[in-house]
Amino acid sequence: MSGQGVLQERGGLWSGRRWIFEKLPSTNRWALDNSKLLRHGDAVVARQQTAGRGRFDRIWQSPGTENLTVSFCIDVDPAKPPPSLLPAAAAVAVRNTLFKAGAPATLKWPNDVICCNRKIAGILAEQDSLHENRIILGIGININPAAPIEVENGRLPAVGLHQVDGGCRWGTEQLLSELVIHLELWLKAVQNDPHTLLEEWRKYDALAGRQLSITTAAGRINGSYAGIDGQGRLLLQEETGNISAHWAGDVSISGTIPAGTGLFQ
Ligand code: BTN
Image (cartoon, rainbow, N blue to C red):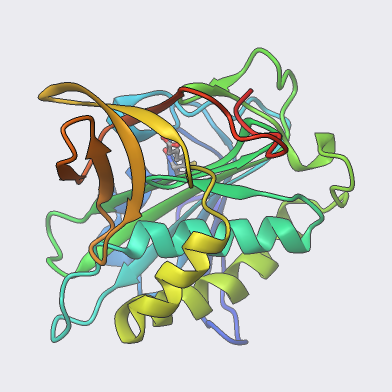
């Protein structure tokens, strides 16, 4: 490996190697560009990203303080159906990791992890165009962003683990070790037992019972949230009563907030 990074061989539950960099433009970009060097389970970690990417080509800001920015190389089983729920599985794994670290996080379709009405983590899964069955799974978790009020990752303002009441003072290493345990569990579930994954999602679904609008390439549609289906699509009951299914889009909450939920005020 060139002088910029360190390669660690690892044992343990998921014996992927760690490619550790002080600074990269984007761990997803590096993983896609260097995919031939990677094996299933490898993790590319950067202590700082200068051009982190989010969904819809948004910028993922991780100012040079403590944040976890990591991309995992995942080779899926070609004999099984394509795992369109993989990003959802990653979101559940991140949510459960953060919960273990003291943050009462919830899930917002398609794969945002939120806490105290702010975004604490985001996921960007990208197909490797050279390896048909390979997905680069990028995860950004805010631990201690320098200016959480001003930093927007996506459409919600950001919050870091250390800013959440009861959030542990974990650093990137501890968070990554815990994340790997949860990821292994939920990435297995997504191919073998997707119902368990959907049940887990429902338990922490921040959109349950909400009136939404979703903006897609086709425009904006209002309706009531009707869950996610077995392929990971958002189901929306439109004002006509018709239920439409959406692969992608930006969701915003409208209408009355049920009392006592504390989210999305
Ligand atoms: C989103 O919420 O829009 C997804 C954000 C994904 C950010 C992570 S940070 C590690 C990896 N490298 C990137 O450039 N992006 C992902």
